[in-house]
Length: 185
Image (cartoon, rainbow, N blue to C red):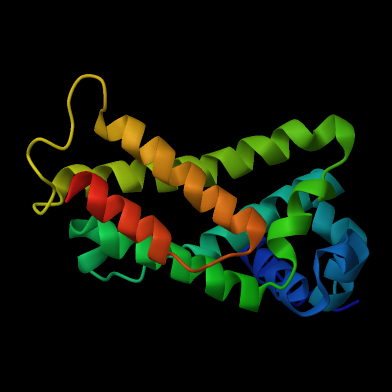
């Protein structure tokens, strides 16, 4: 076979494309090797196991879905950030059909902890981003938070609404935005 893929990033780019075009159920180490035009053994030079490749590919898809566009408004306005997240979820659902519902089932039982760890790392990045945007949003009412109802509590609630919308494949954020407006603006 020709060795046309020479890096881990190249393999992950091909992996994302396979997940996008063929779905995650068709994704495996042999299809990745074939698409990269390398031997299966060459893939193992970059990934210890099929589970390692799958986990890295899933993490790569999450990063692709939530790649920051550099829009300053999402850094300064909590509502804009929420709209952006829902838009990313909608676009991600279109770009990677079935990914959200299937990816968590792709890890073998004994290897789910690594996949869960990687997914939590991606989600934690979003939670931290939400918190940062919330505390820097100049439009938030000064009395919106206190010791019993903190910005961290609020972000946790909003984040669970995002996850719920993701699982239900409901990318209409209007009710979530209205809840945010009534609560903190």
